[in-house]
Length: 638
Image (cartoon, rainbow, N blue to C red; front, side, top):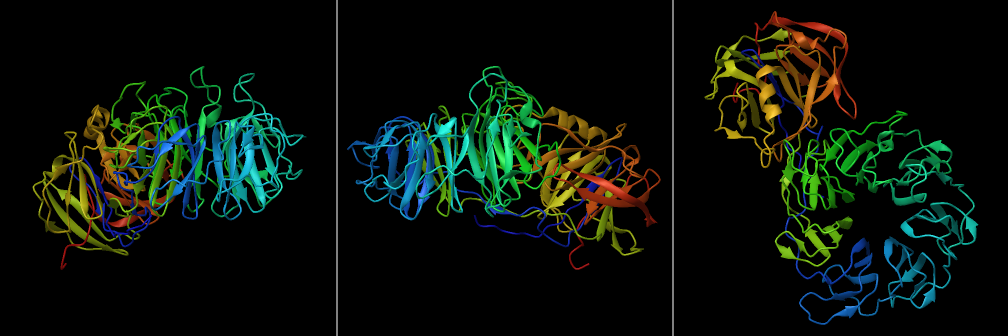
């Protein structure tokens, strides 16, 4: 995906008649990005029944696996029999007439093999006219089975496959493979299919005792090849407690990493004894994302959610970095790119932790497919929509765009039966970052504004600034991103306008979360805000009478504010939220104004979940007066 990096300023607005905003000197805390288009390209094949469950690209060929039996070229009336496997030209969409191995069961997984081949996994016992149970290697030319590869009998369905550095990883619901006892996860020799005795893999238990079969349903390998994430119906891996999710270190004999989470130990609706559905690493391997089913679970629940985890977390009880809730609908597939976390299922909404098969406060419509921010999981405005059906079987990002395999025939405004390509080069969004150093600070004086240059230990004189049609005495807070000043009013208003340090553009409402059920809690609490700023996908703020530093997620591209209010920290060292009268972040420091009008500074530490104050508190020179409000960019020419 193409990235676009745009410099911007970030600041914050305090309250009680004032606020504070800071000018940035850098970019990059949040990279910009480019989403795929919302309308699918023409010419892709029509898959006429069943489901597409796997999508892979081999050179210039796309291979699909699933439960379908009939297909046709786009624009043709001639139906072609294709049972479970289909190959077509990635550029033209024309179906390969010579590729029809026709397995006698459902294909759940297709993986890259040696040049010109793919590995196929599923619930079949015959493929290409040859006896193969559960897993086979197939040549693209002619669709013939590679005779040298024969894993022998597999006593359960193969759910996923990955070829990595001379090992073919096989996941599924089996207990024996090729005559060897091996439960749920095995490693085969990629040329012969013979089960390898090393690494020794021990997958055991079930997420809910006595229910279902021990199964690994999905795998993904980090781009650097070091880590393998696995999900499924299990309770332990390599003898260590890991419920439904584990990460292996492939550089050290496939041992379990220190990553462990209790998040998926929770029980969802009784129907779901295992509810994890897909897992995918980010392009840089720093994090991975898990999608689930499970039924409505409420705020903080793993059920019917998408959640991000940091790969290298050493916390023995790791928490998600963020949770995106549908409010009662399954998410089946996830694909992480540099610009977005694309997800698909039969969900109707996102930003919906308070919904229970209904849209709750702040919920936005995202029918069947969505693009979420990698920073906080809130949806982008990207919203092609698709007929939901059971859901999306697989997503694949390539240089051409995003391939979507499903069980339905509408995506965007067009009919694309069960396979569609959303093209690369859609809408772009800018980068966002906090300032590296303290620069120019703006504060309210009555209903107007003044600015002060802040250089090292010196604070410049207060210089009047046009108020821009804003009564700053009733402003709750503000921050500046990519040249836009976001202003939160005590009356519950939330607007943005251009601001270059001197002049303001017209205000427009920021109401991305108001499409279905208004987020009244956010609007109402602005009346009590005493300090507010933005940093890395979160709006942080203090409230009158509260001992906590709170935050909500915020996506500037879509204008969506997170439905759930969360706590970043409570009193830390000399930082006391009840005494705050203005807040902003610059570099690695948090600044705030006390009730006596003094400017204070402490460290600002970022974790995967949120930032928090840390370290020694310092008193900075200058007296700002009670109710200092916000800081921002230097004036043009000044």
